[in-house]
Image (tube, rainbow over all chains, first blue to last red; front, top):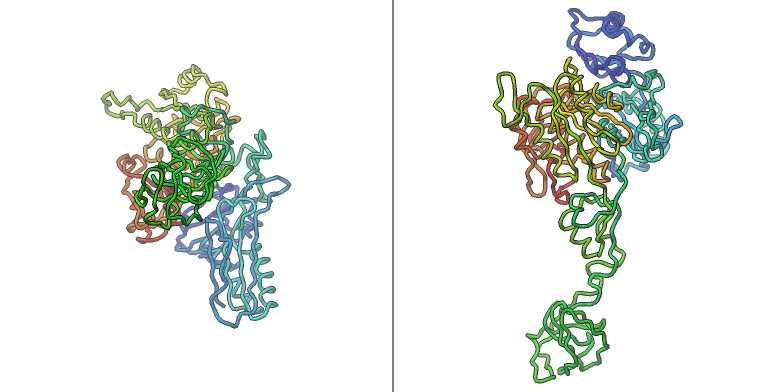
Length: 79
Length: 561
């Protein structure tokens, strides 16, 4: 799956997109586990980050499949 | 509800028409959020916004639909600008139409609150107001994310194209202007607007060989009382029945005259008979071209032959201009041999020296060039033989060595020379490993060594610095259309694609040029423009609108914007 990082998360991970292989769909905890293993710097941001799946905010029960586009959304500040 | 949503890098129009529909609309409510001149207590010049465009559009639509279920409205339009937005310009526009004002006001208020919580758009950085904070070095970037704990010096190295251009602009201040004789001012940037010292022409002038008479004189015959040649100045009032013989270009003796062409007159001795009266007065009036005090050449103009001729005509023989820039250019890499030498296996001829030298010819600067060996210690000693005092150069360019290989020492070299690295990567293809540093009023670029990367980085980055250091017009993107379909794989980075710019009925048309890699030098010779291919897009349809940067001077007045 493609995972996108925005705003300060780009700085924390030093990249804006990463491909994660997911043989079977991941739940939220598994996805975070994988992300934190790759990018320990994300730990500090986790409480404020919402996950999006295919351009919509994902609920707590969401499952993230290999074909999905996932985005980590830090607190927004548009307008 | 009819919904229109747009995310754009361009300024939002001053006026946006209300929705076309129907007499059912009784209220059209508009809101503009503009960038304030202050962020977290700092005076700023601009804010850089970032968006997750695919999701931001959907989220805005979802919010509007959800809120309009409670506050029914007929139409809504939302435009959010992203990229660098200068202070005072609109970041977001929202327009809502409804039968009665109450619904529109309620929907708009709730929508703006929800947008600020849910729509994935971010204020990324504030660009400092360098006019008021000159000399402040460490506050070059004011972070405005509340939870950003990165210390100064550990700022992220990666910039978007827009961010990179804005930061170069913010760090390059115009050098003190100097008075320079006209003969030496070609190519320099004029720093004060030159106005007409007097009316041009200074008196009414005849445009024909003929006879000047009073405009209200109906006499059939007149007596010729004087003759005026082009260089004469003989003021006098004319009475009815009097005429003055005038040559083309001659200054007329007073105002309120007309000139009868000599072909329409029969002259006998000092008397003329007017055979035919023309409707034209055959006079170029005083001040017809330029009135006294009217601007002739605006500040910021790069002086070409025509501008210099106007300055001469206005008597401005020592115009105030930017000084010629002094540029130091180093090439690096042991694989590089001079072009006159036959390369051994593994070596290539140096093309960057002549390339940079030639690109710089469009600017008023003096260039000194040298090649540095790959051994950093040797290179450092060699660089120290150059006079690197602050007064001796304004811009340092280093070709090659900008990546992160073990022999890529550009970054270390710039730091050794006292440059603070502002950024070291741009999220761009080609040209990603571009380094930008500053040291007081001097700036430096580490250019990725491939020719196409050189071409791209020169035009968006080096040209920006040159324009800003001299007070000239900074490079900016223009709108054009793609002449043929672009077929490409989606790239995670934005691309500046080399193209051939041609004109079709005053519309710029861009023909994409083929290029295989950033080392591709053949397309560089054909390219005269670069156009933007957004990240993750891949192919673009023929005739689609694209933004382009001309790489040779064009007559921008002809651009259909």
